[in-house]
Image 1 (cartoon, helix red, strand yellow):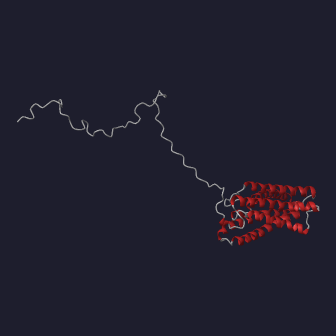
Image 2 (cartoon, helix red, strand yellow; image 1 turned 45 degrees about the vertical axis):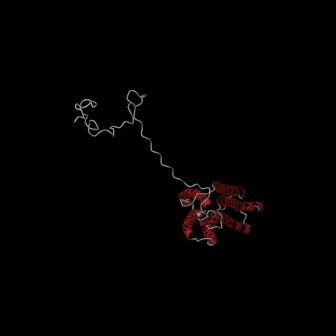
Image 3 (cartoon, rainbow, N blue to C red; image 1 turned 60 degrees about the vertical axis):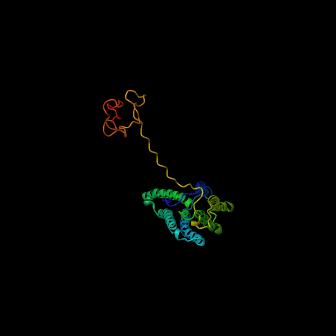
Amino acid sequence: MFHPAWIPESLDPSVERLKRIRIIAGLAATLGVYTFLVGGFDVTELLTNTLTAAVVLLFLTPLTVGVMLLVWRRTGTVRELRVPLAGAFKLLLLFVCALAVPVLLAWFMLGLGREDLFLFLFLCLVMLWLVVFVFAAALRVSGNFFGTGAVHRSLPALLAVVTCWLMALPDLITGDLKGLGLALGVVFILAAPLTVTGIALLELRRLKRRYGIRLREHPAAQGPFPGLVPQVPAPAPAAHPAPAPAPAPGRPHLPVQGNPYAHPRSPYAPAVPGHPYGAATPGNPYVPPAQNPYAR
């Protein structure tokens, strides 16, 4: 769902693996910090931060893409990018909705009373499925960043860096260290944007050195990517020769008897049976005639 067919595959699978490892490691670090150092999660703060992240994604992604469109407009037209941009925006809306549904459901579950125990248990199962679904979606969109890789190969790296830093800077400015000390809080807040920035710079460098893709250049000016081997259809299998005639029954090791090249009828045979040059004179053809041929 979050990786449709129109999104191109990554040019560097090793970078994609680094992105997924970073997401899993970041989630594990967040759970560990809040569980063992802070002493637990503040559910209200967690829901508020998640909803804020969804709103930031919804407005920041189109804004960043719009700035890059102004840059690309100097070297080419942007009309040809409307189709991939529309697909990326639809994918962004789908992910934001998928992120907002469990948040709203959690707010609703917090208002349930003891008399709604069975409903609460049922909604817990739904919430568990939604959390797994959102996590799988986040792994999918981490590589293509809502399909923006179909617009420009370098655009997902830029969007990831801008989004991550914009979500981390308010905590540093306001001094919200998540209940941690100064040193540990700063490290915890800056770990995510610094890691994302490092992976993004690695991706941009490899795209530039291996494929000649630069962020400032118009996507139409990139041309074919070197190193990508076009898919050549496999040749059709050759026709099998006619099988040899079966050997005579009872003698499997003997070759087939007779002339294999014999024609059923000679093409030079006369149409009328008999001598081809007419009927021969009866008798000896070399016997001299009875009369003298020189007599007068």
